[in-house]
Length: 164
Image (tube, rainbow, N blue to C red):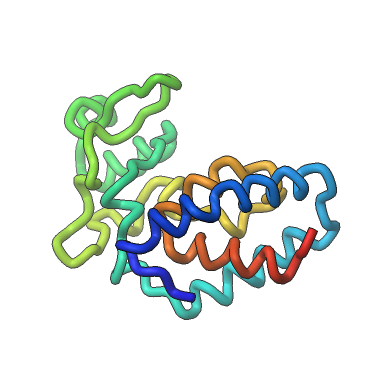
């Protein structure tokens, strides 16, 4: 199934309780091969997914910027880190640096990232479905299935491959 962005929110909402129960079981009884299965599912999905056709993550959420991200991006933009922070970032309720607004300032009209080569770690790793110890980020994944059609598909395949 390839949900459209219009369908994604409703589908994710309909599956939320099912996914939450599945992830709760996953945390209690984590399969030994989980990381390998997730890597395979992630790789298979992203072979057929073109993020440039969607960019919903960039349109609806902002990444967390680490100090290393700030240094790297500000250098790329030929700014001092403090200038970059003042122009683009704010501190959120968790005391993390995030974008002042969404959609992302660096997303162009063709859904391409203008700072792609130096983008934040959170952007490089999104939707985090190939992360080691995947069972530790299931709360984040529950949020991401409502944002990213690829994450939605990966979780649906995961439930088939690893029935609990």
